[in-house]
Length: 430
Image 1: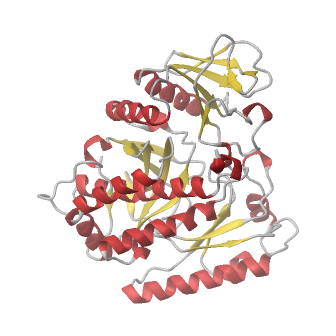
Image 2: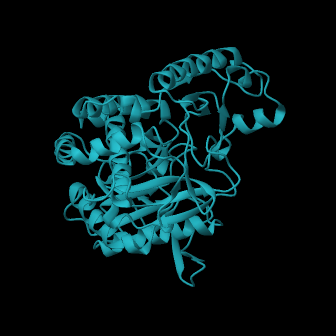
Image 3: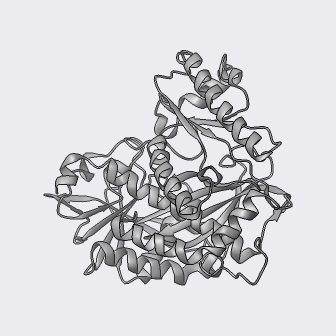
C-alpha cells in the first residue's frame, strides 16, 4: 500500500529524493565506512515525518515493540538481519534470553514478543523469555489471540550471569526500555552480552542527547551530498528544571520555544514555505507518546490548565517530568485511507527490515500520532527500501521508500554514536 500524498512533490523533498537516488552508490559506500567505525544497535525503530519539503526522524526507539505490525512478507529479511546481528556480537551463540516489558495484559505487545522470539529462533537460536515480574515465580503460559502461547519464566541470577532454571544464555536481549531504572538483577552482567546496554534505557537516556548525535550525522551527510542538513534534521532545544504541577520553569520554557520557532521561521522564509511552523514539547526521556504537546506560539506553554499540566507531568511508570526537549515540528502530508499517517521504519543490526504506517484519523498533520485511536498499516519494505528504481519517477514507491530507509539509517547511526558517547567509563575501559 502506498500512501496518498497531498503535496505535488515539486520542491525541496523532490530534489532531496533525486539527490539520494543519484548518489545511492556514494551513500551506501559512506554507510559501509561508518559501520566499520561504529557498532550498530542490535535493533531499533525510527518514526519519520514527510512534510513535502522535509523528510526527518522525530523519534528513535532502541527497544522497539511493534514487530507484530510488520508484514509477514518481511520475515526473510528479518531473519537474515538477525543472523548478522547475532554473528556480530557472539558468532557461536546458541541460546538467547529475551526480557520483555511487564505488559502481560497487553495482547498487542505480547504478539510483538512472540514475533521477535520467532525471528530469533529462525536465526538459529534457542530463545526463552524471562520476566522481571515478581509474581512470575514459575513458568507461566499466556494465551495469544492466534491460539498460540507465550511462556514467561522467572529469571535466575547466578554470580555475574543471568538465565533461567537449566538455561544459561550467552546473550540477554532487552525488549524492556527500563523506564523505571535497571533492576539489580540486570546489573553487573560482565560475563554475558546485555543488549541494548543498560545506559540505553530511559532511566538515563535523553532524547536531546540522541538528536545532538544526529546533528553530527546529518551535518556529515549534508556535506557528503552538498545539501542543507536541515532538510533531513529537525532543530531542537532542551529545557530542564521544569515542574508542570508547580508551574515552575514556564518562562524559561517559553523563551526556548520562542527561540526555536524564530529559527524555523527563518528557514521557512529561506525556502518560501507558507506552512505555519510549530514545535513539539515532549519529555526528554520516555516513550509511548506520553508527555507530548504541540505548540505554535510560545505563549501556549504559559498558564497551562490542570488537564494539560497532568498530561505533561508524568510519563511511563509514573515518572515525573523535569526535563523536556523542544523539537521542530515536521508536518506530515501522508495519508492512508483518509487518516493522517507517518512511516515507522524497523532495523536490525544495520539493515532495514520493514516498516509500517502509524495512522490516526482524529489527529491533524501537525499533531502527535502516537496516541490512543491510532492503528497500523503494514508495508512490505523488503524490496522498496533496498532496491530503488531510477527508471521510475522520483516519488515512485521503491524510491520513496529508499529515501525512508536512508533517513532511518542516519538515525540508527546517530543512536550508535549516542550509545558510544554515553557509555560509563568502566565500559569504555573494558
